[in-house]
Length: 321
Image (cartoon, rainbow, N blue to C red; front, side):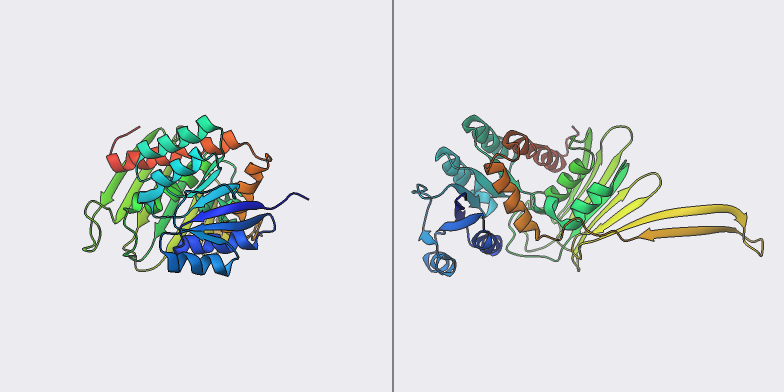
């Protein structure tokens, strides 16, 4: 039997705590080290899951791989330390807060021949997995990610939220990058960091007239996570919060209604079973473990990181690619 993969977890905030639980509960992994500069917080998480605490990344000799769930502004330095130590890395999205820094991290991992996976978690949402598997010839996507304001998020919504759904659009259209990018940013909330946008809207085109409208907001008054895939003869709607998928088909009949005032129409609705109901964070960890085990192509997975980051950078800069 293969020994569980020993992980170091960097960061014990809201996402870090979730990663700690998922790693500790996996039969294929073990949480060996918790890295957190705040000793009381780090020791509490480490003790809870039977791991060792450390204030920094100075010693990674006892681990096989690393998960970085620290604030985005620290990602570049942490990623460079992990990769320089020769350890595979799963890093929360975005990889870094700028395209140049993200490209540097990806290039470093490529030079080292190390697996690198970005935590674009919605790829593993059961509703997304099912909707994309059912989609045959998408022509128009509408993707919405709106949330109430969260003061702890220091970056703008383009890197924090929009990157998820830009990535979904790219995956839905076969992994190709958009041919054009048009973006608009809005700055509204008085408590936001200067220069950090509260709303980001993007129109992406993918050739042959295929379109994606992507919307992210952190001033919504309710949480919305939806993916709508339009095909010529049907529509696939995924609710990413409730993890539900619905397929709609509209049928128009030529025959007039009995009173002669109109035409009969019919809407057909299907609710398919989900292909999986696995927790996305668990599915993502299993995916990373499969990369480490050689069951998935590490080079291909690493190359899937940059398209969404390049597109978000274009939205922010206002440049068309």
